[in-house]
Amino acid sequence: MSSPSLQADLPRKTEPGGVAGGFPAARVGPGPPRTRQLPRVGPGPFLLLGPWTDQGTRGSSLPTGAGPETRAAIMLAPGSSPKPRTRLVLQWKPISWLTYWIALCAAEALPACPFSCSCDSRSLEVDCSGLGLTVVPPDVPAATRTLLLQNNRLSSLPSWAFANLSSLQRLDLSNNFLDRLPRAAFGDLANLTELQLRNNSLRALDPELLRHLPRLRHLDLSLNGLARLPPGLFDGLPALRSLSLRANRLQSLDRLTFEPLASLQLLQVGDNPWECDCHLRDFKHWLEWFSYRGGRLDQLACTLPKELRGKDMRVVPMEMFNYCSQLEDENSSAGLEVPGPPCTKASLEPAKPKPGPEPEPEPSTACPQKQRPRPVSVRRAIGTVIIAGVVCGIVCIMMVVAAAYGCIYASLMAKYHRELKKRQPLMGDPEGEHEDQKQISSVA
Image 1 (tube, rainbow, N blue to C red):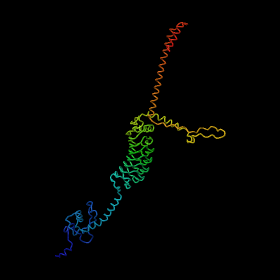
Image 2 (cartoon, rainbow, N blue to C red):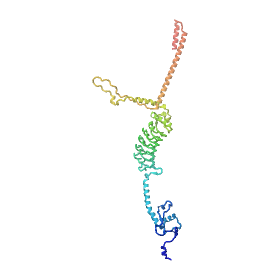
Image 3 (tube, rainbow, N blue to C red):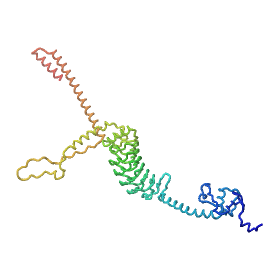
Image 4 (tube, rainbow, N blue to C red):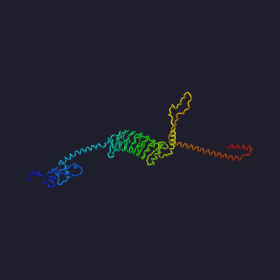
């Protein structure tokens, strides 16, 4: 028998593939230790481990017949061999640093939300409404698609307010105090589809303001103080579908301003002081074409003249505007005259004659007397027609009365002469002649 110390130093003889004392059998003899590759058991720290050895498990308590999954789990458990845990820690440090840098770069790449505004990362919406802002926040994310700035105190916009928002699709500036808009305010918003400018203090618009918005579909300019629309304002809006001009101070509109809006489907022009005169005739023609192709219009109620107050412009007959052609003819004929020199006070005074022989008479260059401009009004046209009708009626009645009187007088005289011939006395009877004269005087 050998001593216990000697037995402890000798390797235990085991069957191939068996276990000795619950541990995996170590390979006896020279050569490198037997190694295995852990199978992929799922995501987690197990994937970070390299090859493991049977020697690394010596001194641990693995159950008999434990598989690779169980052995790997026990290796990472508290109280297991320190070598695999040390290897895990050494491999986990670079992974942690890599994860940290990735997170930091991602945080820097994410857009920052402006102060006091609420942002939605899914819809890319920035809501800054009702905050009492006097300027547009400068740190709006460049990827923003919807920007809500209504119910604030914005009184003006710089030309660079939306310079970096090329992806913006919806912009709401309603219920502010905007009184003017620079020409390049929306120059970089090529993808804008909806623009809300409702309830501001706009009095005039630049013709180039909307020129760079080819995708704009909805435009709201209601509840402002617009008195006129400049020509060419809508030239760059081929995709516009709805336009609201309600509650402004518009009195007339130019047809040429609306002709580029080939895709327009809804037009709101109510609550404006429309003057249904010659200045609105061409726009009435455009409205008929707009309605014919399926466009929708809320109303266009006339304010002046009084005879048409409250009536829709679309139901006013075109015969009411016949006098406009006469005015145009007069204006065109007046425009064909050759313009003379400008009239001044000195030209009105007659030139003093010079001593010497009388010069030949020169054509007069005196300033013609200016005619008072006649007001263009449907009321005057209606009055003229009524007066002319009354006068013509009176003349016709007088002519009928005169003709009837003439006919009656002629018939009486013919009857008198017939009776006179029947009662004519003998020639030379003075009494008969005297009686005839009495009868003639009585008839007269």
